Length: 525
Image (tube, rainbow, N blue to C red; front, side, top):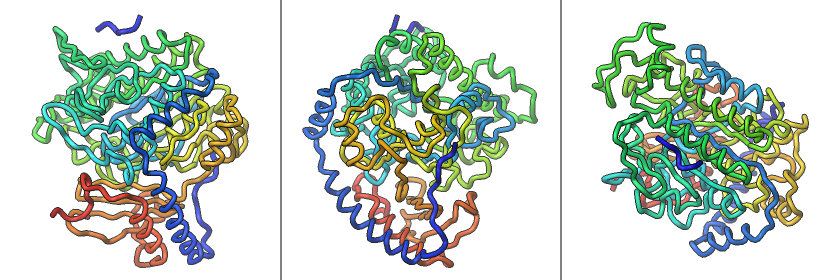
């Protein structure tokens, strides 16, 4: 399998007093913001191309390398640094000790494809072109449109070498959504999410070519090898590595050298394969070993960056695409591992357990070590953050807000940041005008999610409050309201007690999205 290459910040909160006024102001702000957002969403292919070209015209200064590592279905509580007691994750725990650990970071969606779309486009699922998993035959999912401006396109235009390694899920072979049509120079992995369920495989895609192998192999190890080769090959220029690992997503499948560490540790009844995926004789041991193998290879990549002298020049972001697996599917056991660490809901749910995920950021000398931040952020903030650090003006129509000020302020023990990495006056002004960064940390007015599947769901977080709608495909419009500050497990519905906040939530749930015929939230017609 030869590679191709040779201190916490302030959190969102409202004061108890004056909530009626706050509610009124929020409703008014929503209407103004709605008009501004609508004006921003008129971009077509020509506008997208012009924007990328404009960034290319800027003289390139040496910006930081970016390594974005995305785990698959890893729960908020499945790392030691987030409270996991059974599974060993020493390298990711060390990453947290050496960097900044977020406690209130959210995935873009509670399932794979839309979460990855928000990550790469900076748009939440009320505006993103891919809002749910849409399966295509014989291979692939709904394509990310050519008109989308992706993080990879923006970085490529600034002179970055760009690679996606692992799982894609945003376009079938020969579609406009293929990675090489979305700003990546190189791709190696699974184009199709369904194919990615088989960790042991006999073929993968390299760029636009399907590559067959004589003997099946475990793809995770091949992805690590490819990633190590990429950073070494591109070490003399800025690079963006989007390492979308498939672990610990089912099916349960891990090499024996990792499985041996957990075999026999717990009561571990065999899984018979009758609840999806493939059978396994020691399912709990297998799942733990998958998480630990993921951790092992993150450690290998970090070590290699250090050996190449790139540690201080590289921003590492580690996160997950959504919460952990539900309903004991495939032999999984999220309850046994306390995979959400007490949060309600799992993958497929817009409750906290389906959306809140780890985020660890590391860049020695720029990001302080051993800091925990309560800053509230989401996957669609990553594009804005990386663009700010790389000196790229923000594209139009973003829902994301850069959290670069939080990252860099941690390194100085401050609550705000000056313009990063030698941004020119023109780029700094663009960030200031957009209100997205280049100074003190801007806070979200709200975070929004929707999902047409799993019964039809919406959720919005505004300050300490979280509103949820469920069963929308059957006409459900009732709003549940939770106080995340006092009740992070979302165990007490306060909707009847706080009608003024329900009214705010109802307005946000309506105004935060544009209607989609492809992804309707209401009853089937």
